[in-house]
Length: 93
Image (tube, rainbow, N blue to C red):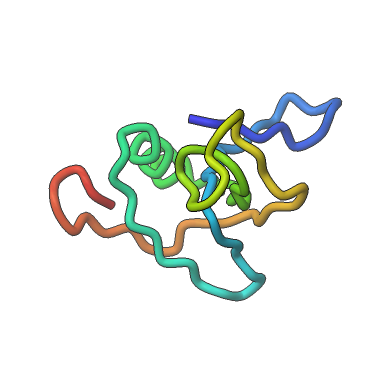
């Protein structure tokens, strides 16, 4: 699981969900989560009532296009809050 440091002087971190998309203020971003690290993050956020960050992934194994080298992200992301969690099947949120 990735974590985002909220500032250079802060010890507060948020789980980071890398996606090839962005979230907009007031908008909904339906997610289907099935990877173990992401399931852990989603359950932790639900249990603790905390948010998470969505960062636009531009390079890495989870995007179409350039996949070689380390993951790269856009410099800005979105702070998200879970509104509703459903389990469509075992191992999927």
